[in-house]
Structure formats: C-alpha cells, structure tokens
Amino acid sequence: EVDLSVVEPYAEYLVQKQGVKQVFLNGTTGESVSLSVEERKRLAEEWCKIGKGRLDQVVVHVGCPSLKDSRELAQHAAAAGADGIAVISPSFFKPSSSTALRMFLKEIAAAAPCLPFYYYHIPSMTSVHLPARDVVRGIEKEIPSFRGVKFSDQDLLDFGQCVSSCPSDWSLLYGVDEQLLGALAMGATGAVGSTYNYLGRKVDHMLLAFNKGDLVQARAVQCQLQEFLSFAIGHGFGLPMNKQLMSEVSGLPLGPPRLPLLPCPEQDVRAVVGKLLSILGEE
Ligand SMILES: CC(=O)N[C@H](C=O)[C@@H](O)[C@H](O)[C@H](O)CO
Ligand SMILES: CC(=O)C(=O)O
Image 1: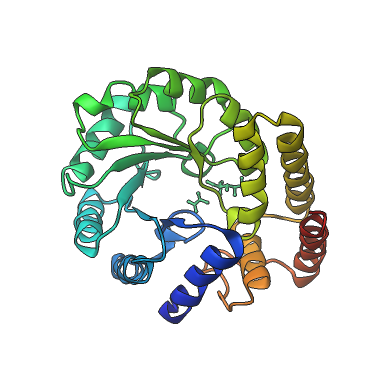
Image 2: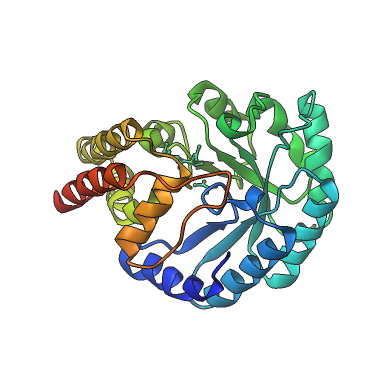
C-alpha cells in the first residue's frame, strides 16, 4: 500500500542530503503504471503540498493506457499545483506512428493547457521504438504547452537530433544515468534518473565540473557511477533493487515494490549497498 506519511521525510532527505529540489513523480521509479488513478492523485497532492517552499519543481507523470485516465490525471495535477506534466507512450496497444502518438499526447496536454508538458521517451520499458525526434519535431505547433523531453534511451543520435531541432526554451532531460556526461556534451539541460535518489549529491559534482569545463573531473565522477551501475546490473539492478537502495541510504521505510515485481534477494542488495557506500566514501 502507498504510505503517504513517508513523503514529507523523504522530500526533506532529498533536499538536505542529496541537494535534489526537483522531483519527477509517479514515473518509473514511482511505479506509476502499477498504481490506481486514485493512488496517483493522492501522491500528486501530497508531493505538491509538501513541495511548497521546499522544492523548486514537482513534475507529475500522468501517462496511462487509457486516454481518459490520463486526461483526468492531467487535470488533477493542474488543480493540485504541479509545475509540469509528462507522458510516456502507451505500450499494450502501441501507437503505429509518431503521428498517432502525437495525437494521444495532444489530447492529454489539452486537459491541462497551462502546465508545461514533456514527452517521456523510454523505449526500453514501453517497447515503442518510434524515434523521439519524429515525435517532437514541430510538436509545439500542435501542443502550445510543449516544453521538452525526458529522454531515457542510449541513442545519442536521436537525442542530438531532438536537441538540434528544438526551440530554445525546451528542457532536454537525460535519463540514462550511466552515460549522462555524453548527453551533457550533446546539449542535455538536465537529468532525471532513478539513481539520483541516492547519488544526487555525487552527480551534482559532475554537473559542476562539466559547467566549469573541467572534463577530467566530470569524467572521474561518471566513471565512478559507471563502475557502481555495472556492478549493480550484474546483481540484478532494476526498480526493486533501486527502491531497496533508496530505503537503505535514506533510512526511511519505502517498502517493497507492488506485484508482479518482487524484491531482490537480500544478499544481492547487501553486495550492491557495499559497492555504493565505497563509491560514496571516495569523495
Ligand atoms: C529504465 C529506467 O528505469 N531508466 C531510468 C530513468 O528513466 C534510469 O534512471 C535507469 O534506472 C538508470 O540509468 C540505471 O540504468
Ligand atoms: C527515474 C525516472 O526517470 C523515473 O522514475 O521515471
């Protein structure tokens, strides 16, 4: 069951311990597609309420297989005071073309026309492999509130073409934590990722170094992250393990994932926690 009582201490932890003041809610890590519409609304309300004066931005993912549910969540996010909304492609009945996907996105954006709207591209989860560049090129003419892409894919050719064709006020948020530095070089304006729940501080050092033009330092941090993630992937890293690491580092009980996901075996989690702590100790 969703436990709303941990939202406030978790938000405090993100701000105080990780330097994270922008939250992407009800996405992959938040198990959105396993939650009911009602649960997603309660979470959005709680985070928007808790975020006031504490967080800079709460962006709520509102994508659902049902267009009607998505529109309802978009409207609700606007009323709850969210700073933006994002949508992934539906994945059981898949859009047959980028035009079909744009039509779907447009209907949702129209339910909350005042909120900045982001397309959340994550083909490894949706199995919708339409190039993001085809989805977003010129989309601002159809969706006036369109403001960017959360790009969770390794294809830097596709990412680069989103960057080079987009209006200057878009956010290009990269979402493959193990290769963020490559995307920064290609023009990413920010990052959203599951590991920033416990590596936020660390990655801030990389962003700082990159912004100063210190590529040697930035690469050193990215390589540490790669070492950690490649170890974790070897031990079954995925949403359940990520959640276990989030609980471990924050000290807050975030609970198990919802079925059909299962928690990772304790011995794998212990090994990965050990690796994580050793990397965090190498400041
Ligand atoms: C598939 C997936 O969950 N992607 C996340 C963001 O979207 C990433 O943050 C990854 O979890 C991370 O890069 C580790 O592979
Ligand atoms: C990590 C991420 O991008 C998500 O939870 O959606």
